[in-house]
View (tube, rainbow, N blue to C red):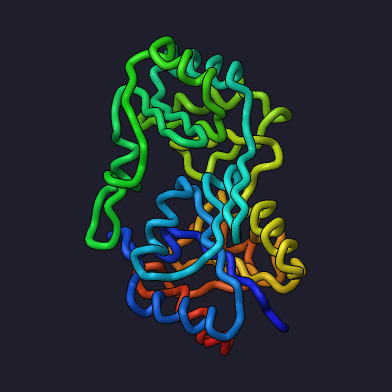
Length: 271
């Protein structure tokens, strides 16, 4: 098959467990791009974080960020918004049920009560300094930032908790027809515009370049990668992915800590 694009997830896929891109994967990305194949970083991360990784290795990529709520390719940046009123409604529900959450706008990230979730994904390391890149703030009650939110445009809301599965109760109260709502992990829910998904974002960028869906390779490890697996010619699960994810892909590679991205590309003789 004449593949023309690779859409690669970041956490658990391109990045190792230390949130670094291993040298073998870096080399693979450059070789792939040199061969004329487009590379898209397709991630649940905010797009600024994805861009910071590319800048750290001096690599030019296209981006699907916030699980498809924001896209950047060539000179284009696109955002898919969600209702401020509904987000505020969900925020009150979270606070009532003692569930942590964050709200992502086009330009800022608001975190309720703590930065525990932020610190899992966005801690500084030798490759990137997210603390210098990402605009963020803490708040203690949605009332404190409601006026600010009404002057901004929201693209995503995340909910998360540990313990007694309070998210299951919230899940039942969410409007699954009005939004794209996914639960990639038991303790984590993501809410976005109904058109937002990794699959839709990747295919929009592919269409811009005249690339067919059948010419796209996708790699990932989690439930938020399913949409791009379904909308690609070749779907590849990481060795560290859950068994249920592996069953839904056409191929499985090594783990993220063993440079599974590079190994898959080599096995396909693309590099």
